[in-house]
Length: 307
Image (cartoon, rainbow, N blue to C red; front, side, top):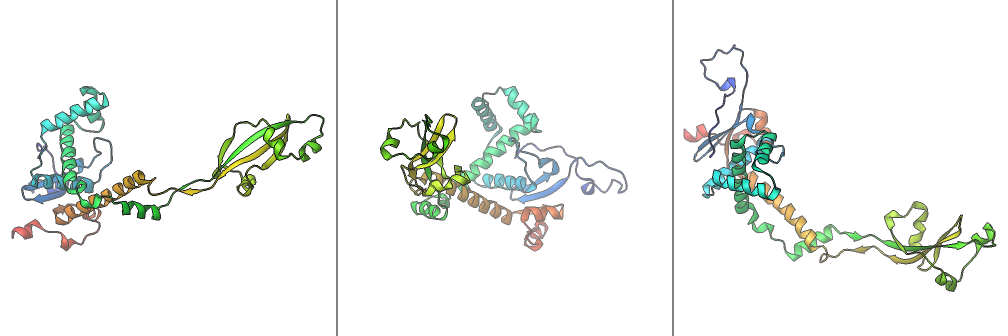
């Protein structure tokens, strides 16, 4: 698919002409061999590195990516180096970067120019096969009933809130005790020059102010002596907690269901690729991690198949 690398394999896999007791430096190591109709592919330790976006990748990620590429080939989906070059140019345009800056980004993630282009090829190839195998899956279609059922299972509410206003009554000739005990008629309260109301959510109420939840609209909920006189706080309006309807949440729920189903369908596709693949691992622990403990006998052996 891409230009072959010149590699030095793990000493244990090298020719028997090398002395077993000779001290060697491991430059690279075969971790897995994927067998397919068009031949085989080696996956090396050096292949297991972050993506161009800087996302860490595991051996399983690399194997699945290679299997997707093989699947794409079976459907005659191809991405050339020229396609990758055009994609690179589009990335430069979108991000407002020069070619030199893009090449620097390659190097920052451990890729030279040729490797970076190969990564872009693979990325485009994987995107295209996911379009065919995953994004067109009927399971991703969201029905109205799905949205309604999701809303029932995951309800959301608009929090209760309280509209409060304040005013400061000058002390005048009254003592503190008289001012604090003074009662006001509804007409007097209405005539005061109240400050602009403020909305307070229920979660913002202090513990000693939670009684406001049970207070009646229009009542003075607390009073406090301050330097300027008596500060009154009145409850203007209460807005109870309300449930947000499925209709109001349609876009949000559709997006959440879409992400959830896409993840499930993608995983099914990945598991299907792994279950059908013929893969040989050089480390037993790698097989366990990649195949999630699948029994040894369930893996097809290319030697047995060719026997």
